[in-house]
Image (tube, rainbow, N blue to C red; front, top):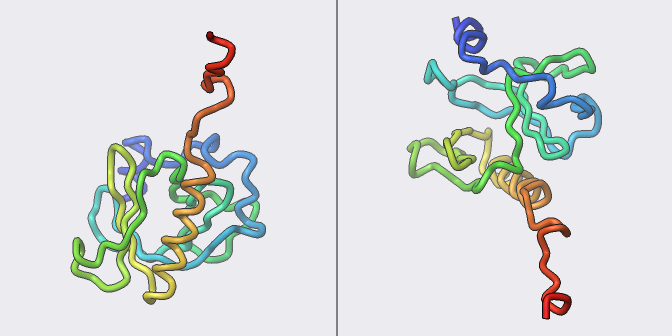
Length: 143
């Protein structure tokens, strides 16, 4: 049922979202997290991989070159990652927010939660859109 909803709503990840990312090899971080579904609000345990500014998730831990992610979040579009135990009333919960939505996750321990928050936070900083050289104004040359 969920796969039908994902297909109808265009939620299956576009291969362009993860093209040129060797997600099966040497991720920055990987591990099990429990994620709330987008449409059917049940909690599902998924294998997550953080690599090259993308947070990808899979049904199974055995991720290979031929694996297709169940979802992809470009972390450069995320604004915050922080604990969310108080919001969900669940231990080890954290949230990842973009300008349009907030996604919730539950780690297996406090240590895992903190490690995910730190890893995703570093990736947000590294991959967020920042001022490019072409946008920098050289005030000395404008005088």
